[in-house]
Image 1 (cartoon, rainbow, N blue to C red):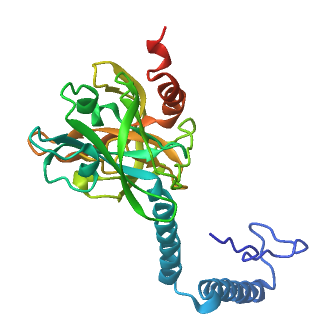
Image 2 (tube, rainbow, N blue to C red; image 1 turned 30 degrees about the vertical axis):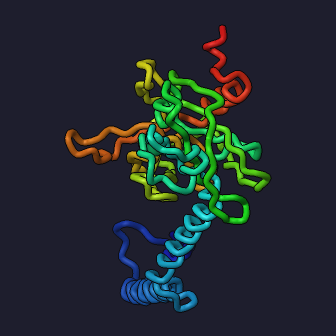
Length: 309
């Protein structure tokens, strides 16, 4: 909005005007006022025309330029963030198979997929953060026939599939930490943000592997804050972030990021339309500030602090 000042016209203060007086130069004064008003209209119109034609750039072109900038920024965000996202599969090996677990990292023909999910790289040591419910079957496996396959990219963009071992579990907070051996390959940890200063309406992005489609990006906004959602063991997870960014089966454990690619939450739950299995647009993520408090204990002790005392 540009305000154009100086378009009004004022009479000189020296003119001795009265409300009911008849002056000998009434008609002359009227002509002056008409002429001045005409000049004012022409001047204001000229300035407005000049403003609208600066650089001869149509308004639609300016809008398109802004859209293009936003689009480029989102593309860059995905390119920089997606290498830190892992694809997690829990496989059950056939009891009749003679293949070792390592063989199923490349050939899944003799295995069944028990569950899929997402995760993100926590550090360069190979720790992967995900949801507890993604690996719950593996955690409770008594047969020894289940294994966890983690697929990710190294820092050079090469896809690698390795076995993930559980090092820490928090069923109450729906969090788990896996450890992978990248065999000396460098990996890119996710950049962590904060969930403390989030606002409803803020843009956010979910990256994960819904229905097995790797590295899928969905966009939305923060729809609500301070929500309460149930955990896998019936406890309550407080302070959850609500978002309308699409989160479906396979997204669980993946990062919810802000506009700068900083992780602000761990995607964990969605309300589905009854009988459809489809997301209703009411989705939830565990706030990253909660995750930051819990994960170090899971890495060192295998359980959250609250379970040790």
